[in-house]
Length: 111
Length: 114
Image (cartoon, rainbow over all chains, first blue to last red; front, side, top):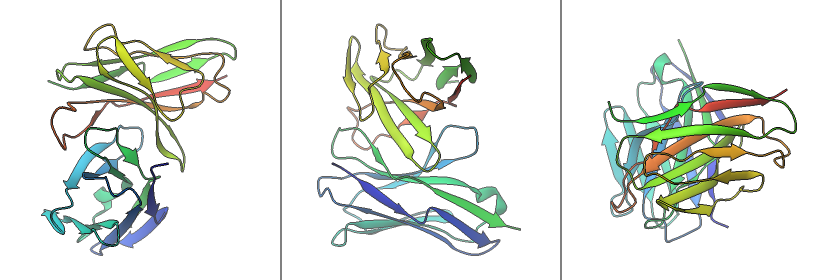
């Protein structure tokens, strides 16, 4: 069964710190790796995504690092802010198949 | 504004009743999806449809049914056969013909069995 394993389950970071969320996968056919951000009571929204032909992608304070040989990818949030407090989901997809989601990480950024 | 509309936002159901959740999109997307979200479980795929009049079971389809009679609409019925229906339900859409296209989500429907 296709799986994406996400860790940690929850994370507390001080304002201004770096938040790091990790995901690992087994299916080498995965070729698209998005991260979604979800606020309480809302639907998830795409935050940033990467393909395996690059090792890093940065958009503002958000960076995806991708390690193809280790089959791992991670989300780094630099200068974390209280407004970043949300649940973050990694996901993966092979070709035109459906997305497989990790179980999510609840991030709390303390003021 | 383009987007996905789910209704209602909150829904209460008595045990033994069927209930239908609405999902409408005006993004002209071919594919639509239904996910169930439970605390600590992530998003689990219930059903998806890649084209009108066709749909496929996801990982947890038992106790659910869908229809796709129009491109814009993908309603989900939670039947009395679903043993634990209380959850947050999310509808999404995408254009699978575009590689790496993102999936857009609605704001969700929270279903509670009373």
